[in-house]
Length: 497
Image 1 (spheres, rainbow, N blue to C red):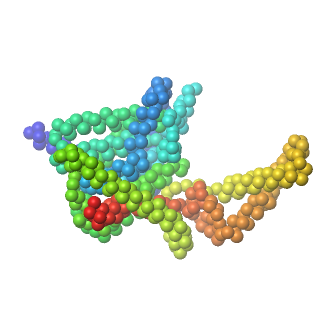
Image 2: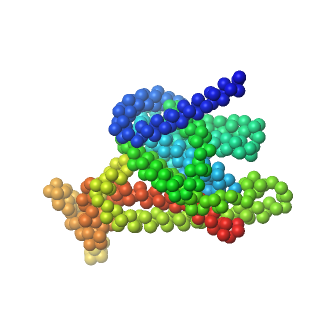
Image 3: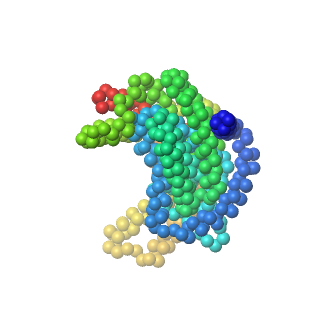
């Protein structure tokens, strides 16, 4: 009786989680609902963030260099760099099915988390005033940490992703009868402590409040249970070949195009694009390699069992597989990104503007031509001033009097201000613009022939259209997935490694 009741409750909970995730994805696909949902959710989220600042401040009053170091480095286990290193190892050292499932799970988890962030637009603790005390971002190091700090706060992606990744790995090992029930319970306890540690680190570092962490845990649990419910259907779909590739391409296009647009630009959409691209590349690789490349001769556990005298040969076997695999991954990623960045602007010229507008990602226009022109003018003025001072020094043997230099600088600044008020360009800026036009455009300034597109399409901060930037990013990470799931296994099989 109790067993039947527990089974029924488990099934009901799984159905509830699957329905919740499906309902959210449907909500994402109806852009007209984004604004009213945000208008209802955001004030309530901000209120909870403000009430949770007291806990963030209390945690930061107990800061210590060693604790900060531990929290910062443990947070790296929930980063793109970690995933790009850890997941391929599973593919190449005996657990391709686990690695494959984790890629799909993390793609879903990252998309759901980032879509919630950009839908609700709840600020991080640093963006909310808190009396006279100044909340700080502790241990911010590296480009990835800075990008994470630029995202919105709710939910905590670190809490969400660490819960999904670690719990699913333990569930998979138990479901495939690779570990016992007792070991499973022990590992579940370890994972629970690890998730709590990660959540505490986000609070201590000033990146989240309790409501963000709670939302991350709830969303992570829903995504995890939903994925476990459908995990058994993946192999049949994956090995359907071209049909799986078509489904993955359509799903990626639809979900990325309908991703909620935040109030201000954040890197969340780029993160979703990266993992969505890796998932698509993996599907392509599996369709290309199916079925023999995913039948490894050994399991990872077998590397460390048996005769210890063979440990050195096992380590060599693993090392050469990893070295070759990561070399292939790096080559395909960088090569595909460079090729698409160079070729896509030319290809997109043949697309009508109306079609390009249909595929414009939900991001803000970060290109500011006036600001770039002002910066170019200031740089040209500084260059001319330095050249004039050098010329005066060579001809007269001494620098001009301080008063004369200040008067000359003031006069040049007045002339440039007058030119800007009349809508004209300073001489240095005009020369730079002329050089740019003659060279067909430069980084950060599209050629004059693209002026119409510059006005009609959103661009990134470097002046590149977002459709070009996002597409090149998508296929660069698709190159990683293709290398991990397709090219590398094929090469390893050919070499007999």
